[in-house]
Amino acid sequence: MKWSPEVICPICKSHVAVRVNRNGFLQESVLGLFGIYPWKCGACGSTFLFRRRGRRPRPNEPAHESGSVAQK
Image 1: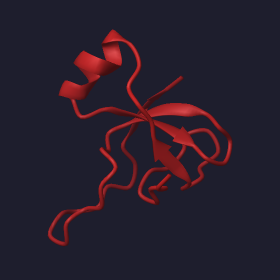
Image 2 (image 1 turned 90 degrees about the vertical axis):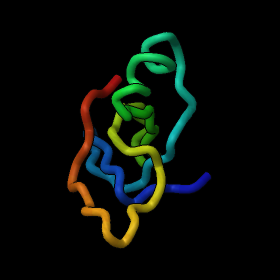
Image 3 (image 1 turned 90 degrees about the horizontal axis):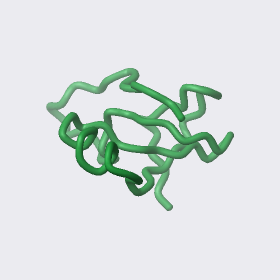
């Protein structure tokens, strides 16, 4: 598993999160169109949605502080 330090858990504010597979119609079709992906926190175990795909930003790309949009 590769942790992503750019993603912050909305529950415990940890930077230890990993991207997980989409599950269900909403995540597979609708949310993907808007760039929203499911993540799981490695610290508290909560699953949440975040607007980050799981790649490192390019050098000329601005870093976003928080893209969290929803939680489960």
